[in-house]
Image 1 (cartoon, rainbow, N blue to C red):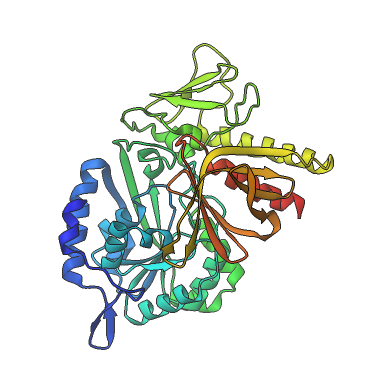
Image 2: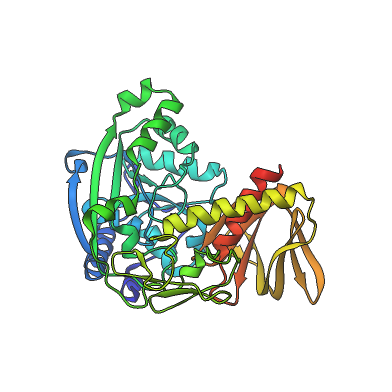
Length: 416
């Protein structure tokens, strides 16, 4: 990836280069970058094309897809000649290397899970410039390979653009590089590009009808597919960092006691353990196998967490629910990160998330005013509180930020 740096250039939020009346990225540089990425990614994964309806299409059109692999934005572009103008979390524009890569493709920064009118305006300009626009309607990489809840605003976005919509499904993308994983795995990723809506159809459809259409077309579960194909995904330390995703032991029901080592996930409290194999499934030769895959395990832990929170609400519990030590907190002003507060404690008490420093309450975030909750880079926790973005870095890299995201979202549903 370092080889890309000499041919990349930085710029402002407007990422297009002028060409007559159009605003386009530099095609020569884009093709060089995509060529290098095609070579690089093909050395990591086995890439296969199943169907490609875009071959006879002329931009502008919109591409929507499932999102399970860190490299998805680049992977889906490998079978399309033109660079795709993706709407991308503005967080990646704060990292110099990714900012340069994304600007080469003419990507648009967007606030995650927040209304961003500037991003919408840029998308309209991309349409007028004859671009291919890309969106992942889940709004984030999914944790288990199944397409999660889609953002309803995507349907409004499609209605507003009124251009053809292509759905791309990537099968095997999750098992090649699970969101929680530390290392990539060598295995098949199969791509299917299908034209699902024409502009004339969109004009006649309601927003609800568009939303149902994209939900139906993006319906996919990696483990259902894998049970049929049983493709192998070879790599080292296959279970490493699985505790970033699975935070609750099914044997003793303790939170935060799971640890991974090599291809094994085990509980430090009761000793329960499972082995993660090259097919992406769990095995256990000694004890009860509660779940044979991470997705089913997660569905159970979410339901169990929900029941815990309901119990706390009914009993008016005001004590500390969960807490982490050695946490850094940082405020972000647009694209600028401010000086962080280091080595504090993050804790959840009552209906507030508190950040303590030197044994004293430093920041108080009321749950009802928290929005835009998300996990970045697998184990960093972000949210907006009263329009201000805060980021929390756990100094211990095995702490689950997903745990915090899940619990806060559930609490907001239950408490308010």
